[in-house]
Amino acid sequence: MVTARRPSWKMTGVPAAVGERSPSLTTLPEDGPACSHANRTALARPDAGGMGPLTEPTRTHPKKESLMSATRKAQATWSGKLADGRGTVSARSSEAFDSLPVSWAARTESAEGQTSPEELVAAAHAACFAMAFSGDLGRAGSPPERLDVSAEVTFDKVEAGWRVVSSALTVRGVVPGMSADAFVAAAEGARDACPISQALKGNVRITVDATLEG
Image (tube, rainbow, N blue to C red; front, side):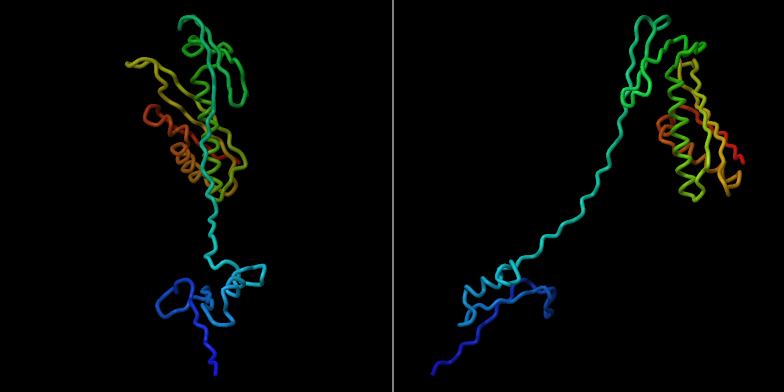
């Protein structure tokens, strides 16, 4: 009389906790007439109707976007001595302006149709402040209809020599639903947080005159 042998089963994987069977665990017969090596292989073959490889699925994590810095380039040329020499400055990243004339006299006397480093700093500060202020107002739930910003940068001779000593910001704005006091407070916050203000901080006195219109 032949006695049928009950197959023994081998558990693959490790339960999540002692006494607890994970729903993801799979069992395969180790031996027995109906559980040959070929059968066990077939169970692991998707093309044979099996469950596929008995391995943990590969987990993929979303790739984090890297923050990229922004770099801008300008170029200047100069010929001659400081007092009577001449130069030009050009925007090389945007090509927005090319060969703007600069001179020492244009910095310390009358501009006479020439730009200067201080005028370029003033333009940068006004634009940066306008964007910073607009962003702050928008995040506070009061986006502006319009902001008109100017910056006056002063170049002066002090005991240590010629220095950029101040940048005076002026802003006139139309912001529906905002009080005048809240507008002034927000302008002062933007004055301090503006990236160009941060670059000048500690070396240049920065002020803001804010007026709510409309």
